[in-house]
Length: 180
Image (cartoon, rainbow, N blue to C red; front, side):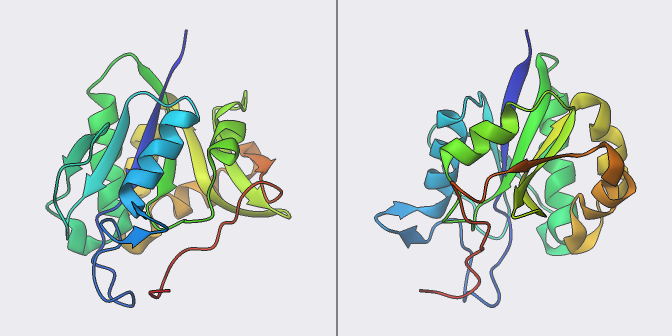
């Protein structure tokens, strides 16, 4: 039996947004709580949330504090994957971002259901989030995660292996860069 964890990257300061996005209330719910709920609804257990610029409790999640959050998304991915590595029962991680208000549990579930050990949500063929990583990819993805690129370089290097799972019919990959 495989154990799927959710990993929500939520450590940024949200410069263009005017502050951290994680605690922002969008349609009656904090973005961070919405992302965690979507992960749980998609079958992820546990769900890790990487925080940094903003730190607070996140119900139903294992909070991982990234003291190096200023380095960018790469440091958050490293912190989140390291937390997942510490739990030997976890063999797959579904990575998503806190600022995707159009993401749905159905889209997350569809990517999580991939039989591939590496998959990405796609929108009319354009790759985006979420990203599914099997344990065998974590160490190399962590080694390549630098600055604001997160897993981008690792995904490019493994482009041919990645299952592109179409989710544009059930979700939007647009992020929330400015306050609505």
